[in-house]
Amino acid sequence: MEELTLQIASTDIDWSRLLEPDMILRIVAQVFLLIASAFFSGSEVALFSLSKAELTQLRRERNPQAGTLYALLDQPRRLIISILCGNEFINVAAAANMAAILLVLVDEASAAWVNMLIMVPLLLLVGEVTPKTIAISDPVGISTRIIARPMSVWLKVVAPLRFLVRFLSDKLTTLFVGEEKSPGNIIQVDELRTLVRDLQESGELKLEERVLADALLESGATEVIAVMKPRTQVAFVDIAQPLTAVRDSMISYQQQRIPIYAGHRDNLQGFVHAEDLMGLSLAGENLDDHPIESVLHPVVVVPPTKRLDEMLEYFIAHQQLAAVVLNEFGGVEGMISIRGLVESVFDPLTRTASAGEAFAGSDPGYYEVPGEMKLTAFNDLTNYGISDPRMTTIGGVVFRHLDRLPQEGDELIVNGVEIRVEKMHEHRIVLLRVARSAPGRSGETEND
Image (cartoon, rainbow, N blue to C red; front, side, top):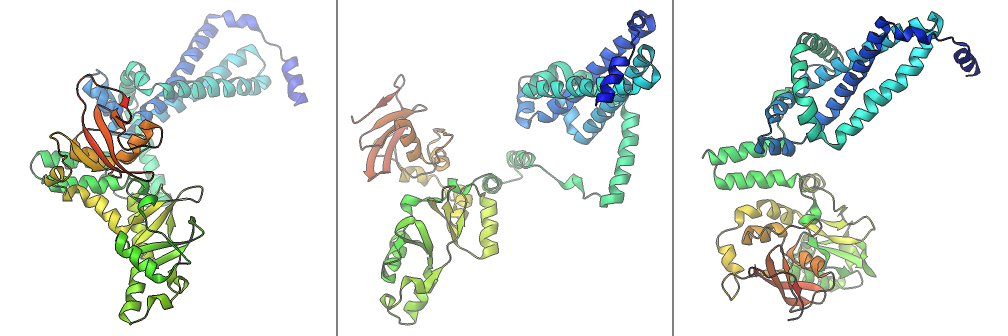
């Protein structure tokens, strides 16, 4: 390091040579090359940061660059090879041009390391970090205003080089990893949704088939916490209780797996299976003669973030019918069963027009719904369109907006929907009365 410092100090630079016409042209070219390097680096980040929703919005707004951006991103491999070819070509040219400038200013022995000291931080700062940071901050604006047209032209200019690079790349890839696995058969979920919708609109797919397809696709993005039976509705039995208490809970709650706890409900000891109790009963055994420990199975727990499709695979692979949903602090959130999971997927198919009559209130235009009704089911029933970033049930929405423990008679308005708490059981909302609010009415009225 000391030797390098001495070399820098002893290097003589002839600054007067910078005013020569040839040097001025090289300096201008260097500035242009750095700008071009920034353009290609920023283009890579901006273009590949665009979501399909943003592209669709640009098309709806009739943005003049929407078609160009669609064309660029339609073949992502072609685009990335073109960008990398441009970026590498520009960076090599910038390094070579800077070397030529330095050979005029300093001796040949010093030019190499001076070039490295200048170009490495310059390309890193101007050609990589800064443009990519700017591009990620506003990919839509930068793509439409700066990138779309020049990049479209560049794709045509670099086509021969891109063909050569892609050919060599394919040969090397095949050599090391084998033949390509039919990429043409790969389809994205959003594309499949669009295809299903188009088929249904064209009459080639029945409405029921589209609903089922949408439900199956949705299961890949839905977490178990959204469809599980909440803790307050799950039957738990203390391990000190007799087996008859377990049997009674199974009958009352229609639950084939009963979680057994010791002391408190978060201290789970295992599951009791309905088929074990049935076997004892069929054998003529007295259930009270058998302690719970004699029929206890290991408890099955899953995190609340597990997706429904993963949960179904888990149930099948482990031959289980139910699992307890445990949060990050070890507390029980609820319970998910294979029956509840399947019902959540096929529920849209089982809903009929009579569902509205089943929840119709005594007054026209009103619905009476249970507090634990899922928001998706509630919106399908009423078409009210209530959404919430955290809560999954209509009762949860009421609780969050009241910001306190609800009471019978509480009234509030959420997204233009008038909601009244009709019935409570301890801390749980049992029944709600909902309707479109009258025009001009807003806010919350409590205990009217």
